[in-house]
Image (cartoon, rainbow, N blue to C red; front, side, top):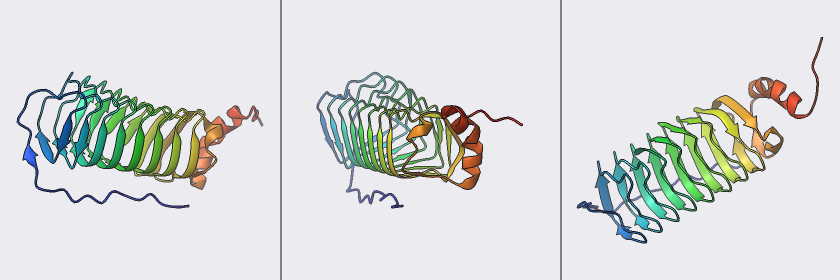
Length: 215
């Protein structure tokens, strides 16, 4: 199994964000957003290159089709952030506290998500390549229809995940504890799990295959 390639970030000197509103299709290059309140703002289609966002509020922020490149996002918090069809490439997302984040149809490449908790993460029809979930809690993530290649779960809680119609290649689930998959067990071809995880999933696998287990 091939391991995920992690981002290698070398950020330039940054200019502090001076406030105001995000702009649709805006261009933010080498900007530091610190404790910024971006809640409800519209940055659809914007490009963030070599940026740092620290402790920012992103409740109901519209960032659909945004491009986040070579950037570090630390301590983001918010409910209902819209990142549908966004591109995240060479990004570190650290200690997020997010709920209902919309990443359906998004492209994630060389992304590390470390620490924190994300509830109801919507990754339907997304493409994930070289992505690492490390030391974080994912509650009811939705990977339905997504394509995952070289994705690793390291010391990560994966609760009630949905993998319906997903395609997996070189996906390492051994570090997921607990590993709870409510839908899409038949799509785990291409994943690597431990013997213990197989035993834990056995009842659900039997039910998925219509096998009755009795004395």
